[in-house]
Amino acid sequence: LGALVLTIGLAGSLALQPALQEMAAGLDLIKGAGWRPGTGVAIGEHEGTVAAVLPSVVLLETAGGRVSIANSRALSGAVVQSDGQQGD
Image (cartoon, rainbow, N blue to C red; front, side, top):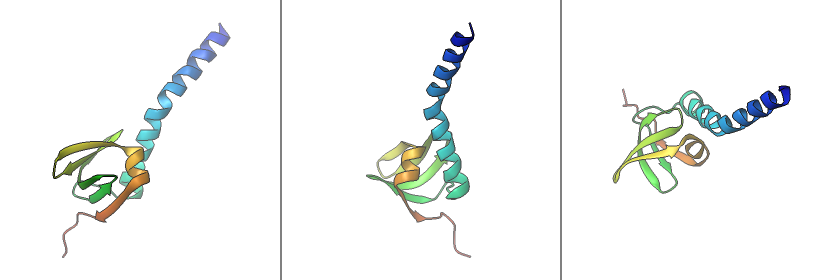
């Protein structure tokens, strides 16, 4: 019985790993990089402004419409163009 519980626990933790990595990347985008709605970014072939940073994806408003991009992809491949703040 102990081995079964251990196997189920291990399988569960492995299944959750991608979701937890996306959540960690999302927190890094918000806290570390300071992303917020209005931040101008280019991620791969997509360019636009951040509409929202959700637990697993960034919603990006582009000229072609709204695009969702995985947080880990956004974190590793984004170029921030503006911070979305207006000048004083």
